[in-house]
Amino acid sequence: MSDPPTTSAASAPALLCIAGLRLAFQGHAVLDGLDLQLARGEIHALLGANGSGKSSLAFAVMGCEGYRCSAGEIWFDGQRIDTLPLHERARLGITLAWQEPARFEGLRIADYLRVGHARADIDDCLRRVGLDPRDYATRPVDRALSGGERKRVELAAVLAMQPRLALLDEPTAGIDMLSLETLIGVIEALRDAGSTVLLITHQSEVAAHADRASQLCGGRIVFQGDIAAVLDHYRRRTCTRCDGVTCHG
Amino acid sequence: MADLQPIIRLFGEAGWTTPAIPEAAHLVAYGQTLASVQSLPGVRVQAGASDGGIGAQIVVGAGIIVAQPIHLCLGLFEAFGVQDVQLTLTLEPGAQATVWAHGLFATAQTARHSMRAEIRLMDGAVLRHQEAHYHGASGNIVVSPHATVHLGQGARYLADFSLLHGRVGRLDIDYAVTVGEGALAELTSRVYGFADDAIRLRERLDLDGAGARGLVKSRVAVRDDARADVIGIIEGNAAGARGHVDCMEVVRDRAVVSAAPEVRVRHPQAKVTHEAAIGSVDSRQLETLMARGLAPDDAVDLIVRGMLT
Image (cartoon, rainbow over all chains, first blue to last red; front, side, top):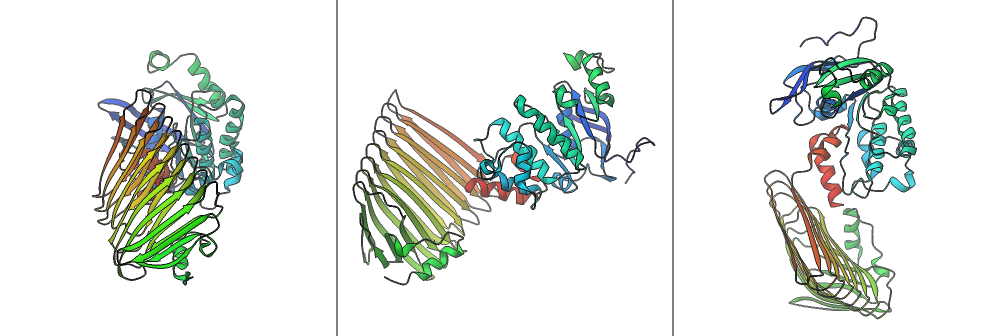
């Protein structure tokens, strides 16, 4: 087995190293030789237009069905993981919060949160996402929850798991304005507790809380830096790959 | 009153709350033998045993609201046996009651349990009918609860059948409910079959009265070589009738399920809808639980158990 891709000499070894990742659906390149490294304990925002490959990258890192890459490597904390099944990646400390989280008939929220960590403080996790445990702990994770409530439950489940790497796909989409700060606080709390966060978002006010960011276009990272620089680059519709045509339509 | 301890002990083994049978109106029968019958003011329970089985009549008086559930504890403690029950259950106008029916066949090796019930809810009556079965490891148990149910004006019938403990064996449920004006019927069935279990659910609602409402809901999971046929039928026959058939079945291994929601409307102002989903567990659900560290089999089990809860 080869060694993980090297990081810059100045930084600590990256928690996640992705090199040359390729994924195609019916001949269409979704990830096109993508390289990315995430430092330990950072919030790394992933920006890009619809279809640029953001969610596909998260699914590939998590190991979801249908997202096995044809080329490239994924390393997590010095271990190559791209051949591991999904649940074994989770047991290393990686988790994913889907943009449209699944619903479970008959599974109580408290039990759902305990799946990731049997001794998790359920009440605390629910309070931190703005849900009163007295109202929610015994409710099922089913269709009776609104979209916003379900997203909060998903974030609470990520909190409960205390992952080393949280892949958050649009965690604040559909959340009311007044609650946005609460959920941003949760994402920051994950980082402060030692988790690394890959944050996929279209909301600049959410992305602004990231430490670093990458801009995706056509399945490749086309710009990377601190969040202010990447947001500026993205807003200026500059893209070395497509001249802004794909990135901004 | 006969010794009820053997049957009460089984409740504990099934993980159920031990019921307060001695204090409640009840009928307890082991095989073709009556063990205990008790009436309470407003609740008349009469029963007799013969070679043909148990014959029982339960009547809840008009306007009586029964605080404690009425218990129907039926089962076998021998390895081999038969139980045939003919039951008529009547709730007079405005009566309200809960019936907890338990089929306890945990120790039986080869057994047949047959229930033929006629349930009549008169105007404004409300019945919550919960039936749970506890079977053992033997697949040679044949259970066939059949019932005809008549709901008067404004009556409500909420029935919930579950067979989640042990082998199903052969299960043949056949319920037919006629729903009168402004009345409501909800039938829910939850069954988990495995090995070579065979399950047949046939539940039919005739929404005959104006404004009658009904729901037929099935949740069935099968694995190994089990088979299930699920038939939910609703006919909307009057103005304002509303019905819905909701089938969700999970299939694993070599098991096979057929689900046939039948909806029929005979009045232009009636509306009946259906949804049916059969297949393996939803991949998003599965991956979500696996992304929290559960192995695939454990994730499937959690999803199925939740669905059957």
